[in-house]
Amino acid sequence: MEETLRSLQQEAIEKVNEAQDLKALNDVRVAYLGKKGPVTEALKGMGKLSAEERPKMGALANEVRGAITETIEAKQAILEKEAVEKKLQSETIDVTLPGRPVKSGNHHPLTMIVEEIEDLFIGMGYTIAEGPEVEKDYYNFEALNLPKGHPARDMQDSFYISEETLLRTHTSPVQARTMELADGKGPIKIICPGKVYRRDTDDATHSHQFTQIEGLVVDEHIRMSDLKGTLNVFAKKMFGEDREIRLRPSFFPFTEPSVEMDISCKICGGEGCRVCKGTGWIEILGAGMVHPNVLEMAGFDSSKYSGFAFGMGPERIAMLKYGIDDIRHYYTNDTRFLKQFSEKE
Ligand code: FA5
Image (cartoon, rainbow, N blue to C red; front, side):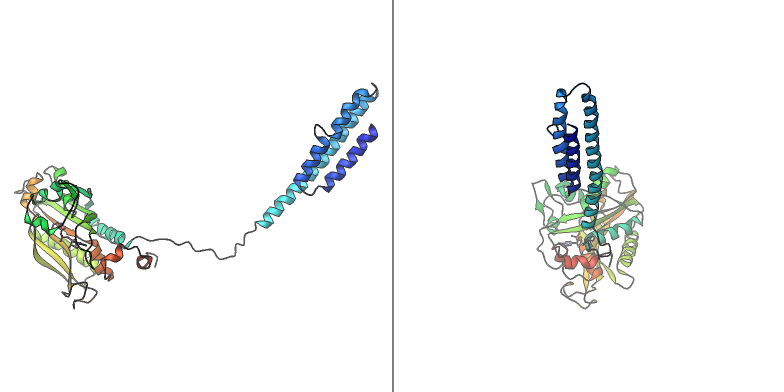
């Protein structure tokens, strides 16, 4: 029995040394030390031995088992180290290789111009107000001195959803809502940016969906000169001191008197082109003194309070500022157009 155990030990150690990887080593462990392995089998035969021989053989069997286990563990440590080194070698990263550039987007030119206008007015003490795009006929028209059947409703061709709701045609309903919430108490000083919708035929300067920014100031003693001064500051800051502006008398049912502000066309330098329809000027906003009827309907005492309001189209403002010749460029998402407005360049 002693001989069998010794030769088993030698045989197992040879097999361990031959093992090339962890799987082969584990196979040796199972083969020699497993429940059905020869060492276990040899130990089962101990019962047949004499009482003197039994403890001797028991100690030897344990010694053999211990020696095989030790060799396996030592070999395992070597194989594990080799495996880690192999993995590290196969996963080597060349840190000197140039990186692959990640394409990044940039703000849409319209977002940029809206934020620029917002910042400009925030700097003048205005706050931002917002309202729904699906609007009640009441706020879009009636509260702005445009009762049902008023011919001036035709100035803004509308998308109606039901008899009483429509896609707002301008941002002026936000001023009606804000005044109503103020409950007859001034001052109010807001700008309202947002999307608006009209059944206009798309061309170089018209879109059926576009952006507007409304401005409203209501307080005691607000005069037309305050409006003129505000628009002048806005135009000079936005377009530069060298661009010309003009105010033309106009008509809006919700303001009296009313004006429209034009700015000289950058594309043709005032000589007349497709964009300015040959006039040398582009209209960018409508404005005026808030009509007393509008103040009264919102709960303001028009003998005490007065106000001015304006509404502008940022698409057209950006067209003038950057020399964009067609409003439709904003909506086609051509990255060659959009990339020109990257803040990084
Ligand atoms: C209005 O919408 C008035 N609510 C503005 C206003 C507010 C006047 C407060 C008085 C007091 P108007 O329809 O002119 O006005 O539109 C205002 C601006 O929106 C225009 O000057 C123009 O820049 C822009 N705009 C109008 N229609 C279109 C369109 N189809 N596509 C792109 N921009 C447009």
